[in-house]
Image 1 (cartoon, rainbow, N blue to C red):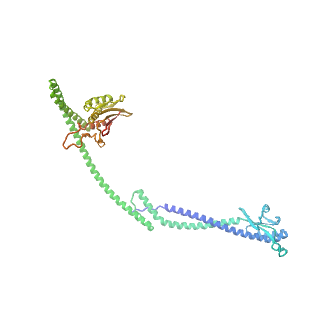
Image 2: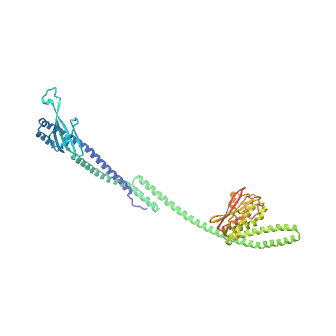
Image 3: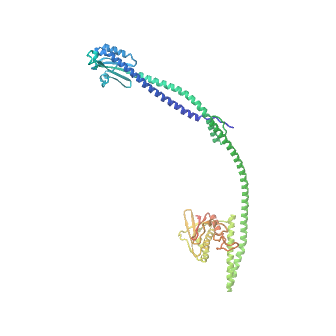
Length: 511
């Protein structure tokens, strides 16, 4: 069993989030606490300053009644003893300064009470508190009826610095933040310990899985941690064990399959060699037999010609007709022997190809002259090439003409009272010759068979058992030999056909 050291990526990410969250909460809490504290402190300062202002108004009453500067200075001196008070002033009802310490005269001249008995103003650095000094007329002995009437004697001002408020708010924020930082540090330690205990088994499992993926090894992991993690580890170990068993079975099957493939390959090679040997023997046998048969057949045809000439000279026409039948059958037999000989040479790889420069129209004319009796026999009309181009090509003249003869003969064989046409086309790299007939056509399912040896598509597939009668004459070798010759010349023969409409054979050869 193999164990790997765990990574801490998950723990580091989680701790990053936790520490960041704690810092954000600490800052937010410190800011909120400082803000609330500053509001409360501000309220206390304002309340104390208002009381100090009221005290100055009470102390300055006598100074205003007597217009005494000294009394006003004494009252201001008592107010200046309050913390953060940095200035005070006493003004009479005509806004004439009775006494003033550290308050700008322009501010005093521009200030308006707006019919309020007391109040305050502020900017970024100071508070200015003010209170109107009134005296009830009853206090002056004017009688009970006018006792409630008041008379304004003047106004007092108190200037208060905000420095204490600002400093205290900052100190509260710093103290709160430090306390929050200490608490956050303790929380981070506790969270780190907790997270480490939780994530260590998960990291261990993740490390094993990653190592197993990269090394393609079926590793095992130590079962530890919480219940769910132990269950995951156990499931992982079971999976790895199952994969080990499957790999062992696959290796066994692979070895068995490789052995069987070697056996089958050896058998196939032997069968292929046997088939190739048999094919070579067949080709040699056919070549030898056809060669031996062709010589006597040619001699027979020669003797028949001599006998026919003698009989015709003696006027014995009744015998010449029979000799004509014998001669036709002998020529048919010779054609079959020649086809078999050509096929065996191609299969044995002994067919020579001689490329020369030939005129295409002349070779076409030779092929048409050869099959002209077949055209007359089935009463077919031939339409020659209409292409005016005089085309000279590099090819084997005999094999090219043999291909054309076979294609035209095939068209004549399967066309009665119809039309057979031949046309050629040329492009940049190749030229093609098309032989088109209006015969019975070839079924689509038979198109793949027409180039097979000894296969005649027009042959009646349902003739009686043991019967040798066929709808059309021929050995089924013409198209097969033509395709082999075309490939020897570097080309191909293709076919298109529809039943009842006719067939088109296209011979394509390189220039």
